Length: 272
Image 1: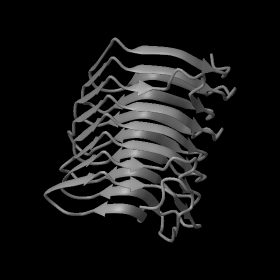
Image 2: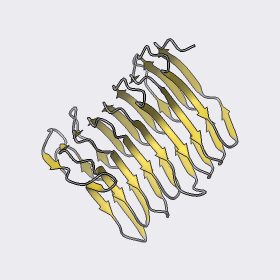
Image 3: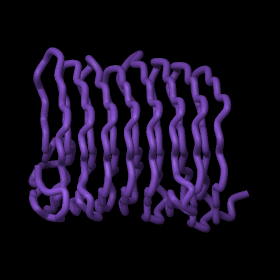
């Protein structure tokens, strides 16, 4: 769908209202067992003045596996969203759950002013998210953003393991510009193991917001097992008094954290 080597191969104008789905490249509403695999999506620009959500892959029903897709082409800004809209690479609202594995997400640019960007976004059902690569992603919106987010209703479990997140920039300097690399907010139990956030390149993940951002964040009453993750080369370049970075933060539930590596975190803030 679109082009892997060009920008703007498909231009879509967002005419949907806030709170509704404006645009979806692949949309599944079929019950049963579904597979979305080996697709390539790139060269898409979304413009317009409305704020309906943009999702590249949206799943609303069934037990669905999304694997081995390439989302975003080889060139910078392959997926470009200039409308002020929430943007999701994969958006699941099926209570039967979703498996997201071995996908490549790359070269996204999100230019909204006040709405969020989410690469993998699960709002219902259990999540398995393993072996994915998320890289070359930029957002300039003064909003909350998450690269992998699990916020399923009820006691929904999550396994988020073996993913690579690198070359990320959240460039807005506002007080609501927050970046979570991995966010879980659920009463179900979560396993977050063997993920790599950042790379060996200096300042691989750059965050400009004047507020707290987090590598791995856990809320909700479910337990968390968080082992063998690496978080490194993160730069918080805002000098404001509320700019902070937490490598791993848990605020609810029982948490087991072991054998993680957190290093080379640069914070310019004057926070005490």
